[in-house]
Length: 105
Picture (tube, rainbow, N blue to C red):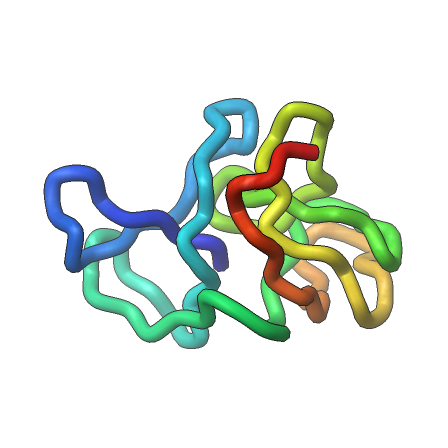
C-alpha cells in the first residue's frame, strides 16, 4: 500500500488518504503495515500494490484511501504506471513502475 511520511515524525509513515486530498506517496510498503509504525518500503523501481478499483493496463495510478492504488485523476500526483496485467476489481494486486512524485497528471 502507498504510504507517506507522518508530518510530526519524519521517521514513521502512514497510509495515504484519498487522492482528492492530493496526498503525495513517499513509497509502497512491502509487508503488512501498522499505522505510524516503521516500515520497509520501495521508493523507486517496480513493485506490487493493491488496487482500489478496476485499473487498466498502462494507466497512471495515484494513492487512494487506505493506501490502495486508484486511476490517477487530472491534477493528482501519479506515483506509478501499471506495467503488468490490469486490475479487474478492487483488491487485485497489480505491478507498477514507480514514477517521480512531483509531476501532476
